[in-house]
Length: 189
Image (cartoon, rainbow, N blue to C red; front, side, top):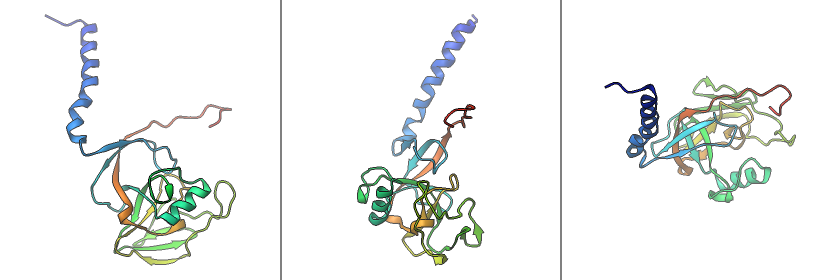
């Protein structure tokens, strides 16, 4: 007995709806997040409790003084981190034992320049953007440097320096990238 194309279509739709349920046991200790910041590629991220690695994504509570500055300037939303700020999702630039060179042209980690890390003198509101002094920084135990290679205006370690690894809430992995939408002519873009 052969199934009609309508019946096969219904089976495929049912299978497509049920297939994600097969992955629930693997997600028991994990969370999913859709970030709303331009600092990271848009999409669906899987949060886990693995150790941070250079080049990987982390969800971090910034130090209280940094978080308060970010809240005052509107870089961070309200949240449950110290200083009443939200967590940030950033890429790990450097970990203990690495060496970071900071210059107006960008960050260099262990001799490798990081793309799109040139510092800006002013933020998007035209205000002066305080930054850590140019120089060579050995990454101290218990700290990490964060950055965004996705958006050049990201507020990250180029401006506030290293952060304590104790503030890392989870690591993250991009599971599903959101499609890039083209803006319409004359639209808001």
